[in-house]
Length: 163
Image (cartoon, rainbow, N blue to C red):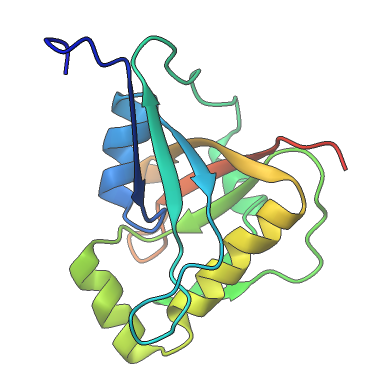
């Protein structure tokens, strides 16, 4: 890409693929933009984002949010591998989306165990988008800060639109 002097790359991915987010956001400084309405071939909602890597203008570092705040500000709760949207979310300040470490294989398994898995997570991201929130950063909680059976990956979501 450098040889061809390409300074921007745009493609689609899922925010659920945490290994991709770790590479694209934390290493390459990309920006994710929610693209609601995407469906799997069998008609189920599929969480989808456009990913834009601007090699000349990388994304800023993470917002200063403590591990405790990350968990408290999550808009989704987890019981094992079952997500549920948190009730009574106040759409003010930075919010977070906690996720387990997910791969395409673990996503398929989770979808088989819980038919609402993808729909629930699509709904969570869509609701954030409707309330003017976009992806600000991706990271992982320090393993010492959370039990091993709890989600460690998270997005920080920040209001990008004034409503």
